[in-house]
Length: 414
Image 1 (cartoon, helix red, strand yellow):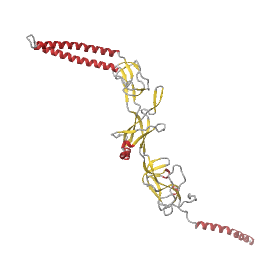
Image 2 (cartoon, one colour):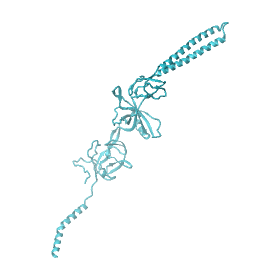
Image 3 (spheres, rainbow, N blue to C red):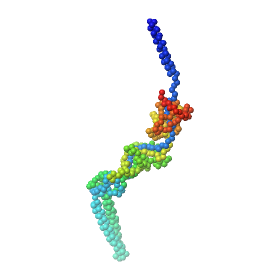
Image 4 (spheres, rainbow, N blue to C red):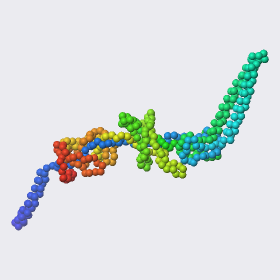
Protein backbone atom coordinates (compact mmCIF):
# COMPACT_ATOMS: atom_id res chain seq x y z
CA UNK A 1 0.00 0.00 0.00
CA UNK A 2 2.81 2.40 0.89
CA UNK A 3 4.57 1.51 -2.37
CA UNK A 4 1.48 2.46 -4.46
CA UNK A 5 1.09 5.80 -2.65
CA UNK A 6 4.69 6.73 -3.33
CA UNK A 7 4.28 5.87 -7.01
CA UNK A 8 1.19 8.06 -7.34
CA UNK A 9 2.95 11.02 -5.74
CA UNK A 10 5.85 10.74 -8.15
CA UNK A 11 3.39 10.72 -11.12
CA UNK A 12 1.64 13.87 -9.88
CA UNK A 13 4.95 15.68 -9.47
CA UNK A 14 5.84 14.72 -13.06
CA UNK A 15 2.54 16.11 -14.48
CA UNK A 16 2.71 19.37 -12.53
CA UNK A 17 4.93 21.27 -15.10
CA UNK A 18 2.63 20.30 -17.96
CA UNK A 19 -0.51 21.52 -16.16
CA UNK A 20 1.27 24.78 -15.27
CA UNK A 21 2.21 25.32 -18.91
CA UNK A 22 -1.41 24.90 -20.10
CA UNK A 23 -2.62 27.31 -17.44
CA UNK A 24 -0.05 29.90 -18.55
CA UNK A 25 -1.17 29.62 -22.19
CA UNK A 26 -4.84 30.03 -21.26
CA UNK A 27 -4.03 33.05 -19.16
CA UNK A 28 -2.05 34.64 -21.98
CA UNK A 29 -4.92 34.10 -24.42
CA UNK A 30 -7.38 35.58 -21.96
CA UNK A 31 -5.21 38.68 -21.62
CA UNK A 32 -4.54 39.06 -25.45
CA UNK A 33 -5.88 42.35 -26.90
CA UNK A 34 -8.84 42.31 -29.39
CA UNK A 35 -8.13 42.32 -33.18
CA UNK A 36 -7.81 45.77 -34.83
CA UNK A 37 -10.06 47.32 -37.54
CA UNK A 38 -10.47 45.16 -40.67
CA UNK A 39 -8.28 46.06 -43.61
CA UNK A 40 -10.15 47.08 -46.77
CA UNK A 41 -9.18 48.18 -50.26
CA UNK A 42 -10.52 51.57 -51.31
CA UNK A 43 -10.55 53.63 -54.51
CA UNK A 44 -11.29 57.27 -55.04
CA UNK A 45 -14.45 58.13 -56.99
CA UNK A 46 -13.53 60.28 -59.98
CA UNK A 47 -15.35 62.18 -62.69
CA UNK A 48 -14.89 60.60 -66.10
CA UNK A 49 -16.38 61.32 -69.54
CA UNK A 50 -19.56 59.33 -70.11
CA UNK A 51 -21.29 58.78 -73.44
CA UNK A 52 -24.92 58.37 -72.41
CA UNK A 53 -26.78 55.57 -74.16
CA UNK A 54 -30.23 54.02 -73.98
CA UNK A 55 -31.21 50.76 -75.69
CA UNK A 56 -34.61 49.77 -77.10
CA UNK A 57 -36.15 47.10 -79.30
CA UNK A 58 -37.08 48.18 -82.82
CA UNK A 59 -37.70 47.14 -86.40
CA UNK A 60 -36.41 48.29 -89.74
CA UNK A 61 -39.06 49.76 -92.00
CA UNK A 62 -38.86 50.93 -95.60
CA UNK A 63 -39.42 54.65 -96.08
CA UNK A 64 -41.62 53.90 -99.13
CA UNK A 65 -43.74 50.85 -99.80
CA UNK A 66 -46.04 50.37 -102.80
CA UNK A 67 -48.41 47.50 -103.53
CA UNK A 68 -48.72 47.10 -107.31
CA UNK A 69 -52.29 46.42 -108.50
CA UNK A 70 -54.00 46.28 -111.88
CA UNK A 71 -56.07 49.36 -112.76
CA UNK A 72 -57.84 47.81 -115.77
CA UNK A 73 -59.14 44.31 -116.55
CA UNK A 74 -57.47 42.00 -119.02
CA UNK A 75 -55.14 39.07 -119.51
CA UNK A 76 -51.62 39.51 -118.08
CA UNK A 77 -49.50 39.39 -121.20
CA UNK A 78 -45.92 39.99 -120.00
CA UNK A 79 -43.76 40.35 -116.88
CA UNK A 80 -40.58 42.39 -117.34
CA UNK A 81 -38.76 42.16 -113.97
CA UNK A 82 -36.79 39.52 -112.08
CA UNK A 83 -38.27 38.74 -108.70
CA UNK A 84 -36.18 40.12 -105.84
CA UNK A 85 -34.25 42.56 -108.03
CA UNK A 86 -33.87 46.32 -107.73
CA UNK A 87 -36.05 48.41 -110.04
CA UNK A 88 -35.97 52.10 -110.84
CA UNK A 89 -38.88 54.47 -110.97
CA UNK A 90 -40.61 54.30 -114.38
CA UNK A 91 -39.31 50.86 -115.33
CA UNK A 92 -41.96 48.55 -116.89
CA UNK A 93 -43.18 45.74 -114.64
CA UNK A 94 -46.21 44.15 -116.35
CA UNK A 95 -48.18 44.50 -119.57
CA UNK A 96 -51.87 43.71 -119.89
CA UNK A 97 -53.12 42.79 -123.38
CA UNK A 98 -53.54 46.05 -125.29
CA UNK A 99 -55.56 45.37 -128.52
CA UNK A 100 -59.02 45.80 -126.91
CA UNK A 101 -57.95 49.12 -125.38
CA UNK A 102 -56.36 50.34 -128.62
CA UNK A 103 -59.61 49.51 -130.45
CA UNK A 104 -61.55 51.48 -127.86
CA UNK A 105 -59.26 54.47 -128.38
CA UNK A 106 -59.74 54.31 -132.17
CA UNK A 107 -63.53 54.12 -131.78
CA UNK A 108 -63.62 57.10 -129.44
CA UNK A 109 -61.39 59.11 -131.73
CA UNK A 110 -63.72 58.40 -134.68
CA UNK A 111 -66.70 59.67 -132.69
CA UNK A 112 -64.81 62.86 -131.88
CA UNK A 113 -63.94 63.42 -135.53
CA UNK A 114 -67.55 62.83 -136.58
CA UNK A 115 -68.92 65.27 -134.02
CA UNK A 116 -66.32 67.88 -134.96
CA UNK A 117 -67.53 67.70 -138.59
CA UNK A 118 -71.12 68.16 -137.51
CA UNK A 119 -70.06 71.07 -135.33
CA UNK A 120 -68.40 72.78 -138.29
CA UNK A 121 -71.58 72.36 -140.36
CA UNK A 122 -73.64 73.77 -137.48
CA UNK A 123 -71.35 76.82 -137.33
CA UNK A 124 -71.87 77.47 -141.07
CA UNK A 125 -75.65 77.17 -140.68
CA UNK A 126 -75.54 79.61 -137.76
CA UNK A 127 -73.50 82.11 -139.75
CA UNK A 128 -76.01 82.02 -142.69
CA UNK A 129 -78.95 82.46 -140.37
CA UNK A 130 -77.25 85.39 -138.72
CA UNK A 131 -76.50 87.10 -142.06
CA UNK A 132 -80.16 86.75 -143.19
CA UNK A 133 -81.48 87.96 -139.87
CA UNK A 134 -81.24 91.67 -140.89
CA UNK A 135 -83.01 91.20 -144.30
CA UNK A 136 -86.61 90.47 -145.38
CA UNK A 137 -85.87 86.72 -145.69
CA UNK A 138 -84.41 86.36 -142.22
CA UNK A 139 -86.29 84.73 -139.38
CA UNK A 140 -85.42 84.88 -135.69
CA UNK A 141 -86.63 81.33 -135.17
CA UNK A 142 -84.23 80.00 -137.79
CA UNK A 143 -81.34 81.79 -136.15
CA UNK A 144 -82.26 80.50 -132.70
CA UNK A 145 -82.53 76.95 -133.98
CA UNK A 146 -79.12 77.16 -135.69
CA UNK A 147 -77.54 78.58 -132.52
CA UNK A 148 -78.96 75.74 -130.39
CA UNK A 149 -77.76 73.15 -132.89
CA UNK A 150 -74.26 74.60 -132.90
CA UNK A 151 -74.03 74.60 -129.09
CA UNK A 152 -75.35 71.03 -128.91
CA UNK A 153 -72.67 69.74 -131.26
CA UNK A 154 -70.01 71.66 -129.32
CA UNK A 155 -71.11 69.96 -126.11
CA UNK A 156 -71.13 66.56 -127.78
CA UNK A 157 -67.58 67.13 -129.00
CA UNK A 158 -66.44 67.88 -125.47
CA UNK A 159 -68.13 64.69 -124.20
CA UNK A 160 -66.60 62.58 -126.94
CA UNK A 161 -63.16 64.05 -126.25
CA UNK A 162 -63.53 63.14 -122.58
CA UNK A 163 -64.42 59.58 -123.49
CA UNK A 164 -61.42 59.46 -125.84
CA UNK A 165 -59.17 60.67 -123.02
CA UNK A 166 -60.55 57.97 -120.69
CA UNK A 167 -59.87 55.32 -123.33
CA UNK A 168 -56.30 56.60 -123.74
CA UNK A 169 -55.78 56.54 -119.96
CA UNK A 170 -57.01 52.96 -119.79
CA UNK A 171 -54.66 52.04 -122.61
CA UNK A 172 -51.82 53.59 -120.63
CA UNK A 173 -52.80 51.50 -117.60
CA UNK A 174 -52.07 48.33 -119.58
CA UNK A 175 -48.37 49.14 -119.06
CA UNK A 176 -47.71 48.87 -115.32
CA UNK A 177 -44.50 50.70 -114.35
CA UNK A 178 -42.60 51.08 -111.07
CA UNK A 179 -43.84 54.15 -109.17
CA UNK A 180 -40.73 54.23 -106.91
CA UNK A 181 -37.15 53.01 -106.90
CA UNK A 182 -36.62 50.00 -104.66
CA UNK A 183 -36.50 46.25 -104.33
CA UNK A 184 -39.36 44.30 -105.86
CA UNK A 185 -40.83 41.15 -104.36
CA UNK A 186 -42.22 38.02 -105.96
CA UNK A 187 -45.12 38.16 -108.35
CA UNK A 188 -48.45 36.94 -107.04
CA UNK A 189 -50.03 36.38 -110.49
CA UNK A 190 -48.19 34.89 -113.44
CA UNK A 191 -48.50 35.56 -117.15
CA UNK A 192 -51.67 34.39 -118.86
CA UNK A 193 -54.00 35.01 -115.92
CA UNK A 194 -56.92 37.39 -116.12
CA UNK A 195 -56.50 40.33 -113.75
CA UNK A 196 -58.87 43.04 -112.59
CA UNK A 197 -58.61 45.92 -110.12
CA UNK A 198 -60.08 43.47 -107.58
CA UNK A 199 -57.36 40.85 -108.12
CA UNK A 200 -55.33 42.23 -105.23
CA UNK A 201 -51.62 42.94 -105.03
CA UNK A 202 -49.57 41.75 -107.99
CA UNK A 203 -46.25 42.49 -106.25
CA UNK A 204 -44.71 44.91 -103.76
CA UNK A 205 -41.85 47.38 -104.03
CA UNK A 206 -40.03 48.67 -100.94
CA UNK A 207 -37.41 51.42 -100.97
CA UNK A 208 -33.91 50.49 -99.79
CA UNK A 209 -31.81 53.53 -98.94
CA UNK A 210 -32.32 55.13 -96.48
CA UNK A 211 -34.43 53.02 -94.15
CA UNK A 212 -36.58 53.86 -91.15
CA UNK A 213 -35.98 52.31 -87.74
CA UNK A 214 -39.12 52.38 -85.61
CA UNK A 215 -39.08 51.62 -81.89
CA UNK A 216 -41.60 52.06 -79.05
CA UNK A 217 -40.38 53.83 -75.91
CA UNK A 218 -42.13 53.91 -72.54
CA UNK A 219 -43.56 57.31 -71.64
CA UNK A 220 -41.31 57.55 -68.59
CA UNK A 221 -38.24 56.88 -70.71
CA UNK A 222 -39.37 59.48 -73.26
CA UNK A 223 -39.63 62.08 -70.51
CA UNK A 224 -36.16 61.15 -69.24
CA UNK A 225 -34.71 61.45 -72.74
CA UNK A 226 -36.40 64.82 -73.24
CA UNK A 227 -34.99 66.12 -69.95
CA UNK A 228 -31.54 64.80 -70.82
CA UNK A 229 -31.22 66.20 -74.34
CA UNK A 230 -33.64 69.15 -74.59
CA UNK A 231 -31.04 71.69 -73.47
CA UNK A 232 -28.36 70.19 -75.74
CA UNK A 233 -30.21 70.46 -79.03
CA UNK A 234 -32.98 67.86 -78.93
CA UNK A 235 -32.79 65.49 -81.89
CA UNK A 236 -29.46 67.00 -82.96
CA UNK A 237 -27.87 65.85 -79.69
CA UNK A 238 -28.70 62.17 -80.31
CA UNK A 239 -27.47 59.65 -82.84
CA UNK A 240 -28.82 56.19 -83.58
CA UNK A 241 -26.74 53.03 -83.64
CA UNK A 242 -28.08 49.54 -84.35
CA UNK A 243 -27.20 46.18 -82.88
CA UNK A 244 -27.94 43.62 -85.59
CA UNK A 245 -29.50 40.21 -84.89
CA UNK A 246 -26.05 38.57 -84.97
CA UNK A 247 -24.80 40.93 -82.22
CA UNK A 248 -22.71 43.19 -84.44
CA UNK A 249 -22.93 46.96 -84.25
CA UNK A 250 -24.06 48.35 -87.62
CA UNK A 251 -21.34 50.61 -89.01
CA UNK A 252 -23.69 53.38 -90.20
CA UNK A 253 -25.28 55.88 -87.82
CA UNK A 254 -28.72 57.42 -88.09
CA UNK A 255 -30.73 60.26 -86.60
CA UNK A 256 -34.13 60.68 -84.96
CA UNK A 257 -36.64 62.50 -87.16
CA UNK A 258 -40.06 61.78 -85.66
CA UNK A 259 -41.81 61.30 -82.31
CA UNK A 260 -45.46 60.27 -82.45
CA UNK A 261 -48.11 62.51 -80.90
CA UNK A 262 -50.16 59.72 -79.29
CA UNK A 263 -49.43 57.28 -76.48
CA UNK A 264 -50.46 53.68 -77.10
CA UNK A 265 -53.09 52.84 -74.50
CA UNK A 266 -52.21 49.13 -74.68
CA UNK A 267 -48.48 49.43 -73.96
CA UNK A 268 -48.13 53.00 -72.58
CA UNK A 269 -45.43 53.70 -75.16
CA UNK A 270 -44.72 56.33 -77.78
CA UNK A 271 -43.39 55.49 -81.23
CA UNK A 272 -40.05 57.09 -82.13
CA UNK A 273 -38.65 56.85 -85.64
CA UNK A 274 -35.24 57.51 -87.14
CA UNK A 275 -33.58 57.27 -90.54
CA UNK A 276 -30.38 55.35 -91.21
CA UNK A 277 -28.36 54.75 -94.41
CA UNK A 278 -28.53 51.33 -96.06
CA UNK A 279 -26.02 51.28 -98.93
CA UNK A 280 -25.47 48.20 -101.02
CA UNK A 281 -22.52 46.08 -99.93
CA UNK A 282 -22.41 43.61 -102.80
CA UNK A 283 -24.14 42.57 -106.01
CA UNK A 284 -24.84 38.89 -106.59
CA UNK A 285 -26.43 37.78 -109.87
CA UNK A 286 -27.68 41.29 -110.47
CA UNK A 287 -29.25 41.58 -107.00
CA UNK A 288 -27.89 44.32 -104.71
CA UNK A 289 -27.24 43.01 -101.19
CA UNK A 290 -27.72 45.30 -98.20
CA UNK A 291 -27.40 44.75 -94.46
CA UNK A 292 -30.80 46.13 -93.47
CA UNK A 293 -34.06 44.59 -94.64
CA UNK A 294 -37.62 45.77 -94.28
CA UNK A 295 -39.19 44.26 -91.14
CA UNK A 296 -35.85 43.21 -89.61
CA UNK A 297 -35.68 43.04 -85.79
CA UNK A 298 -32.84 45.11 -84.27
CA UNK A 299 -31.78 46.72 -80.99
CA UNK A 300 -31.71 50.50 -81.17
CA UNK A 301 -29.02 52.38 -79.25
CA UNK A 302 -29.69 56.07 -78.65
CA UNK A 303 -26.31 57.67 -77.98
CA UNK A 304 -25.50 61.20 -76.97
CA UNK A 305 -23.31 63.07 -79.43
CA UNK A 306 -21.34 64.88 -76.71
CA UNK A 307 -20.05 62.99 -73.63
CA UNK A 308 -20.80 64.32 -70.15
CA UNK A 309 -18.78 64.19 -66.92
CA UNK A 310 -20.05 61.68 -64.37
CA UNK A 311 -18.75 60.08 -61.15
CA UNK A 312 -17.31 56.64 -61.89
CA UNK A 313 -16.51 53.79 -59.47
CA UNK A 314 -15.63 50.10 -59.90
CA UNK A 315 -18.69 47.93 -60.46
CA UNK A 316 -17.45 45.56 -57.76
CA UNK A 317 -17.95 48.27 -55.12
CA UNK A 318 -21.72 48.40 -55.67
CA UNK A 319 -23.93 46.29 -53.41
CA UNK A 320 -27.68 45.78 -53.71
CA UNK A 321 -30.45 45.01 -51.27
CA UNK A 322 -34.23 45.36 -51.25
CA UNK A 323 -33.95 49.13 -50.97
CA UNK A 324 -31.63 49.49 -53.96
CA UNK A 325 -27.95 50.07 -54.65
CA UNK A 326 -25.42 51.27 -52.11
CA UNK A 327 -21.69 51.54 -51.43
CA UNK A 328 -19.50 51.90 -48.34
CA UNK A 329 -17.73 55.27 -48.12
CA UNK A 330 -14.68 55.72 -45.88
CA UNK A 331 -14.73 59.14 -44.27
CA UNK A 332 -11.99 61.23 -42.64
CA UNK A 333 -12.41 59.31 -39.38
CA UNK A 334 -11.78 56.00 -41.18
CA UNK A 335 -15.30 54.80 -40.44
CA UNK A 336 -17.40 53.00 -43.04
CA UNK A 337 -20.60 54.81 -44.04
CA UNK A 338 -23.37 53.07 -45.95
CA UNK A 339 -24.34 55.40 -48.81
CA UNK A 340 -27.42 54.91 -51.02
CA UNK A 341 -26.72 55.74 -54.67
CA UNK A 342 -28.54 55.97 -57.99
CA UNK A 343 -26.72 54.26 -60.83
CA UNK A 344 -26.59 55.35 -64.44
CA UNK A 345 -24.86 53.29 -67.08
CA UNK A 346 -22.75 50.32 -66.04
CA UNK A 347 -20.25 48.07 -67.76
CA UNK A 348 -18.59 44.87 -66.64
CA UNK A 349 -16.01 46.78 -64.57
CA UNK A 350 -17.33 50.32 -64.14
CA UNK A 351 -20.46 52.00 -62.82
CA UNK A 352 -21.47 55.64 -63.24
CA UNK A 353 -23.26 57.21 -60.28
CA UNK A 354 -25.99 59.77 -60.93
CA UNK A 355 -26.85 60.63 -57.31
CA UNK A 356 -25.52 59.98 -53.82
CA UNK A 357 -21.78 60.24 -54.41
CA UNK A 358 -19.27 63.00 -55.08
CA UNK A 359 -15.93 62.92 -56.84
CA UNK A 360 -13.00 62.48 -54.44
CA UNK A 361 -14.79 60.25 -51.92
CA UNK A 362 -13.12 56.95 -51.00
CA UNK A 363 -15.14 53.83 -51.79
CA UNK A 364 -14.59 50.35 -50.36
CA UNK A 365 -13.98 47.90 -53.18
CA UNK A 366 -12.25 45.00 -51.38
CA UNK A 367 -13.08 43.38 -48.05
CA UNK A 368 -16.75 44.34 -48.26
CA UNK A 369 -17.74 41.18 -46.38
CA UNK A 370 -15.87 42.48 -43.31
CA UNK A 371 -17.45 45.96 -43.29
CA UNK A 372 -20.39 47.10 -41.20
CA UNK A 373 -21.97 50.60 -41.19
CA UNK A 374 -20.22 52.89 -38.70
CA UNK A 375 -17.36 50.43 -38.14
CA UNK A 376 -13.73 51.70 -38.13
CA UNK A 377 -11.67 50.22 -40.98
CA UNK A 378 -8.06 50.21 -42.07
CA UNK A 379 -8.13 51.55 -45.67
CA UNK A 380 -5.49 50.79 -48.23
CA UNK A 381 -5.08 50.46 -52.00
CA UNK A 382 -6.77 47.40 -53.54
CA UNK A 383 -4.98 44.80 -55.57
CA UNK A 384 -4.40 46.08 -59.13
CA UNK A 385 -7.21 45.14 -61.54
CA UNK A 386 -7.54 45.85 -65.27
CA UNK A 387 -9.78 48.85 -65.90
CA UNK A 388 -10.06 49.75 -62.20
CA UNK A 389 -10.22 53.36 -61.08
CA UNK A 390 -7.15 55.05 -59.61
CA UNK A 391 -6.59 53.67 -56.06
CA UNK A 392 -6.89 56.04 -53.17
CA UNK A 393 -3.92 56.59 -50.88
CA UNK A 394 -4.15 54.93 -47.44
CA UNK A 395 -5.57 57.23 -44.78
CA UNK A 396 -4.11 57.90 -41.36
CA UNK A 397 -6.27 58.05 -38.28
CA UNK A 398 -6.60 61.79 -38.89
CA UNK A 399 -7.91 61.22 -42.41
CA UNK A 400 -4.76 62.40 -44.23
CA UNK A 401 -2.95 60.20 -46.77
CA UNK A 402 -0.33 58.02 -45.11
CA UNK A 403 3.31 58.03 -46.12
CA UNK A 404 4.34 55.41 -48.69
CA UNK A 405 5.36 52.12 -47.14
CA UNK A 406 7.20 49.15 -48.55
CA UNK A 407 5.21 46.80 -46.37
CA UNK A 408 2.38 44.86 -47.86
CA UNK A 409 -0.97 46.05 -46.47
CA UNK A 410 -2.75 43.80 -44.08
CA UNK A 411 -5.34 41.73 -45.93
CA UNK A 412 -7.40 41.21 -42.78
CA UNK A 413 -6.69 37.50 -42.58
CA UNK A 414 -5.75 36.01 -39.24
